[in-house]
Image 1 (cartoon, rainbow, N blue to C red):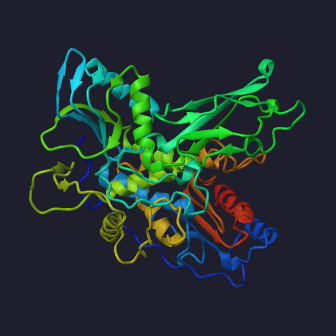
Image 2: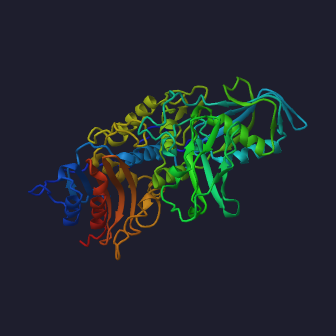
Image 3: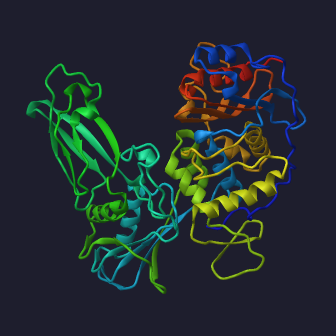
Length: 501
């Protein structure tokens, strides 16, 4: 699908730098009393807070500024930079296309040759969509593959990494690493269904994984055992890439529960899952699924288009999906401006030509840096990007720079689609837990992106206030007690929503 905007196209609306605002005397400056009280309860000093509240109208004055020019770790709030750059550079209707090729011939339901699957970076190539693609291939006559299923990951050139390197939690799905052919987030979902009559919990796993043996049952714990930390009670064994075993028990009182886990051998996940799905979808294969490259001249059999970018960034921003954010970020690294048409280029909506190159994180940083300078100019401090998801100790941005981005987005032709990707306070996404107090002014009136890491909590987005104005709100706490200071940021949002004048 053609890109809907040319690379590095300038928006018609000029960027207006945020004006400076003098601080009120005192350690806490102009902070609202509710914010100050929450910081004190969390035992967080004011020097750990950075915040800015300003109207989306560039002619209006700021409502609050507190250490707003200080670069801080934004945690997952950094996803706003990645997703807004994607909206601007790719367009809200951009799609990724996973393509299926062959080097053989099809005769009476038999493909005599290999089936090649070339990934394009689809951030949400999940079970239902993979099965749909397989059914489409079978409808076109590919039911038996006399060869291998060859998985082409070459659109991304990224080094293999330890998924547990960030925090030691290698089995947590949020630590899944990006991949040009990202299959089902590299996760296995284990469902436990108690069968009291037989004294076991039945274990159902998805997707079907070729060559992976999983215990079909686990004994039930004795009656009266609380649910509690039921995962630890299972004593699951993930040390063998060919099996998942349970040496403990499952509490019957838990009822049916699901446990998503990252597959212990992520490098082989796609091959095992794709082969298993092909077979369970009614296909047959004489070989196996394996990594490889699509040969030149291979025949295109089918294209599986992704969900549009606007849907993808909703998952990224409302549910803070890290690997999906990194998929989008790496896709931006595939773009490069060019002065003249060349083979293999994609036509942009504004007439520009964008060649697609293999993605690397350093190329994504290059594209974001170029885009930021052209969009915001030198008066807005550039963010420090790492992987574009906020799952990083190195990424940095100031509230002032992020507020400039959000103001700019409010004037963008596709700004509403960007804003609608955010969580709504008290309603959905990661902000659903906010604005629960009776009479909350923020409930339903704040579109926000939240972020949390050890020592970091953050929030940024738009707030519709009681006075009819729409504000950009940005706040971060970088401190060992940051999680306890989240009520201070929620108080900042409530204060903004309650503005009467």
